[in-house]
Amino acid sequence: MTLDRAALDELARIGTATLSTQLVKRGIRRHRIGGAAPLRPDQRIAGPAFTLRFLPGREDLPVAEAIGRPGGLVEAIEAAPPGSVLVIETRGDRDGGVLGDILADRARIRGLAGAVSDGVMRDRVGLERVGFPIWCAGLAPPPAFVSLFFAGYGMPIGVGGTAVLPGDLVVADADGAIVLPAALASELLAAAREQDAFERWVIAEVARGRPLPGLYPPDDATRAEYEAARRG
Image (cartoon, rainbow, N blue to C red; front, side, top):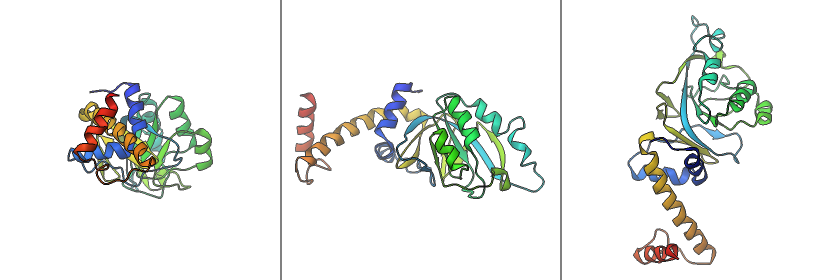
């Protein structure tokens, strides 16, 4: 089920830690995009994945020209729907930056939510000026084509040790980036909303000096107390 913008914003606010707990409870342990750290920890996003794939470069492939050719990286940036998250597979390559400030600014202008990759970016000063939210494994001066070949977009990929299908939801914040199966989106949002409300109540109780035993994790008495407080 597709979530509307308000629901996606709520997922972003609730954050990756709570959503990760809910995924683990459903047996989905491989949902973290390894190597993807925020360039700016104050940013958070949620949106459907728009997948891009880079493969290792090879001497007979036209790597430099591939960016602008039909089906290339430039076309992918133009094809991504507003609100989507660019999820970029590089197989952990650290030698070539897959996005720089020009492509990032175009993505921002088109209304994309952000970019997540297990690879690196380039043009840090320009990226900071543009302000497009990015999660990646670091930065490198060379362009992507020194080590990578752009193989296409809109396909299942494996990024940071995690499978990402087009349309899966991606949530990213200061803790990193995770993938939510699209079919579970509504269920996960409802469960995460409840967990978030309970944990906010627990935080308030801890701030008042209450000890943790029986509070967190909650025993039956604490659950009953919380339900009574929630009902007002």
